[in-house]
Image (cartoon, rainbow, N blue to C red; front, side, top):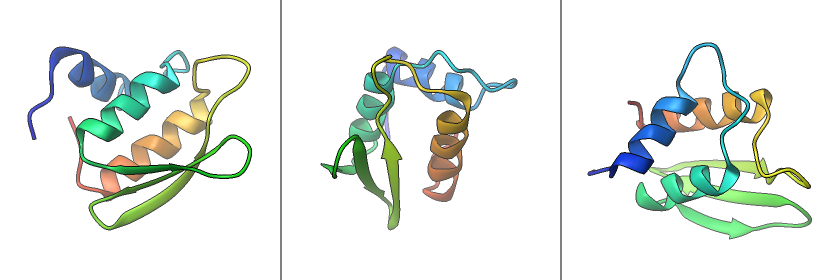
Length: 86
C-alpha cells in the first residue's frame, strides 16, 4: 500500500506518543479509504469501518472536527489489528 505525504503524516500522528487529540476526523476517514477500508454510516454519528477482516464502529466527532484522545487510541488499536502501522 502506497501512502501519499498527507496520509503518511496522519498515520504517524495516530501512532504518536503522547496521544494527540488534534487529528481531524476527515483525515482519518481519508486514511481508511486509502487503505481500502469499507466505510458506512450508522445511526447518529456512528461510522462503521471494515479493513482486512477487522470491523469497528467509531463515533464521528461533533460539533468539533478533531478527534479526542480516546478515539485516537481506538483508531490506533483498529489499525494495528488490521495490520496497518507506520
